[in-house]
Length: 73
Image (cartoon, rainbow, N blue to C red):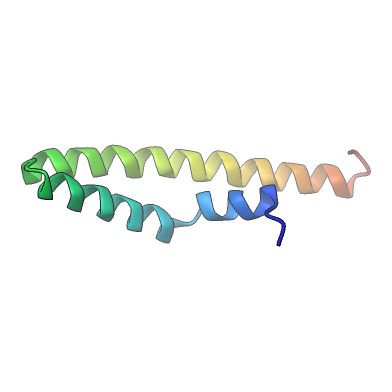
């Protein structure tokens, strides 16, 4: 099975993926002794970054598809 750029982009733009990753990181932080406030701060930063990344990748995929349909690459 070959993994394509579209497969990777779809995973990185998945809200479920980012929520699961954030929950995992927060759980590890609390387990390792960080207080809940620190874990919340890190998760907030992760979700803000994930939102920006999802938007950028999503728009890039839309633009690439438009370009292909228009007869570009």
